Length: 323
Image (cartoon, rainbow, N blue to C red; front, side, top):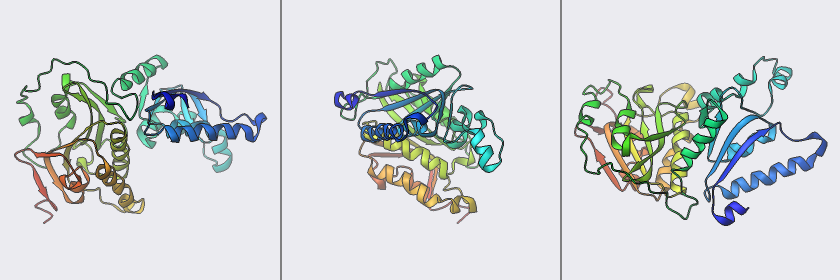
């Protein structure tokens, strides 16, 4: 309540075994009151959760409602029910780390955004993240002094993207050369690697970067990538952070599994996020933008402020071979 009143961020340090059985429903009521405040603070002040130990049961929902979750490798766990309950109910044997460890949630489930090898480094990571963010949704992100000249030329950018449209390249190389001081803070680097998302600065001002990654799934959008990018875009829009979108996308990932799991619904989340965003939106097509994925990736038809394309880039309903 005080954080919202004062307009200052919330950083939660979590280490909980769940509700105390001795307190009965009162403990559950206390949980719900915390959840309610997480929701009310969402989009008003930034919320960061640092998981420093095991969190089970209702204790996992407050971090899940916050904007960013940082876990500690080997010591922190997040799960609704522990390994013993899973074994009793489903007869599956699993360790706490396999069920809800840092690697599981940063790589497989996407529940956590970042992992650190120690508690100290987790706290330092939260400080680095906080440096990019404004205090609340009424303020602009902090501006950092830089000697990086806005007029500098990176001739190597012309050599990173291969002439062959089917040859992969690392989008990180382009991001690092564009942003100030080659400094890029990536969010969820292990989850949905076909999309890159994170914070950087241009002329000292914080920007949110969303980019397709040709090194993974050729940069196709799938369910996880759409969910990852859409949540990041909406966060940036809520806190006045301009968006830089780097596009090299052949389309949405085809497949029975993707269709049955609802790629249409999840893809629509990203479409909605970009369409409703009112922050400045700069889009650069580095090689190709095909089909519906062209529209979804911050196209000019979704009120993109500036949309640029590299000389050899292609925009089409589909590739030449498909046509």
